[in-house]
Length: 100
Image (cartoon, rainbow, N blue to C red; front, side, top):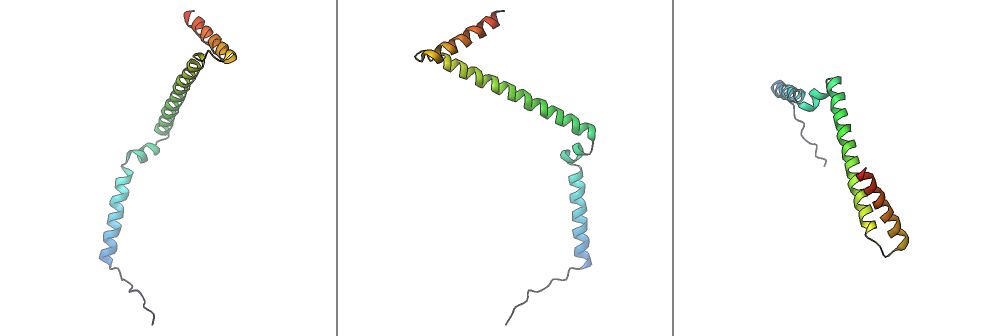
């Protein structure tokens, strides 16, 4: 014996309510900032320019902090003659450049 699932027959009123709900949802989504931003080429280009500038600035600042911390930590190692002298020379050159 095979059981068949009961098929529901949607009425016209149910379909009308579904279509009305979809229209409300599409109207709400069209008012969303993300959609409004992508509807204008100028706004989209400006947003992407600002996003790229922020990403570039963050990358440069992060790399600078990381590199300076690395150079400082290596300059503190005086027991390794080659690395210690090399790091000390880098620090001296950076201090001389800062004085100028």
